[in-house]
Image (tube, rainbow, N blue to C red; front, side, top):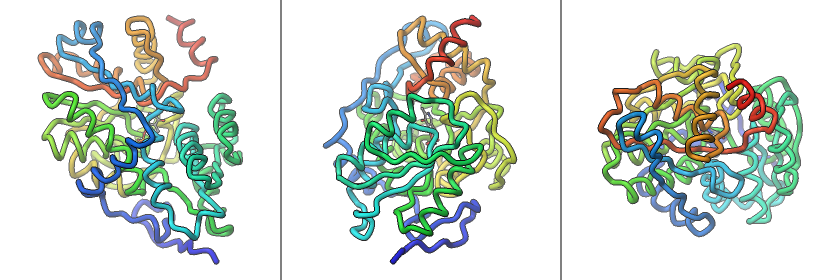
Length: 340
Ligand SMILES: *Cc1c(COP(=O)(O)O)cnc(C)c1O
């Protein structure tokens, strides 16, 4: 009954026949956008006066935190669930998540009346993300020490029980749907010079690379945390090795495995990759909150930390910084504001 067929994958995460490693075409991206815009509002692109002054640049922040579930991840799921093969409608979807990907999946699955099962690591501290997934009607399973343990468990359950396993990155439909953000930037600000975007699995950065990068000829820079730099290394060294450990407080990008499809797209269309320290991510969260009254979670604030690190290199440019999510646990926010 199950159509799950694990096959070899270049990134050593198992894939099944639905995990096509073909990058979405421009046509796929525009088509996905038609689905996404039926369900989601366009997000605001607003100038940050404080960052513009600090960097002597025109700095615009893209408020992905204003989407339902407060992160960009949801963009991909309306496209993926709308195209779901009928054999999976009853059993539904399974994925592994640090919270935002799962919330996005749960929201779209509820819209289309498809069950959603989400495996999170047992160590995930962000209770708000967990209760949000449950409130959206998803079944939440806690398993393993980190994201990659949870991912392997989700893959195994999918093989055994016949779910549609949704990979965190090797999903052309997710990338195409998430690329709607890049199309919005192209329309709202065709003069954009550079987008600086966080990288976990790389779905979002590869989506900007296929739009603002490939279509518009802008620079797209990907950013990881120094403690979780598997994709940075893979991209820089042209390899695809997973790391034994990943350790950043920014749980949304705390992964140790590069994924083949987004990595391939980033290798073709990303200008640069860089890393930032956790302390600089914390400082970026404080800066956004105090200067712009914008709450960013760690994974989102890396783009601001990277812009500050690039400093003079950005002078005179039009820079877009996507605020990819705002689901910062209250305890972390307290610590960050406390040690200022
Ligand atoms: C998942 C996530 C990222 C990283 O996105 P990828 O597509 O996995 O690279 C960045 N910011 C937030 C808030 C996230 O939830």
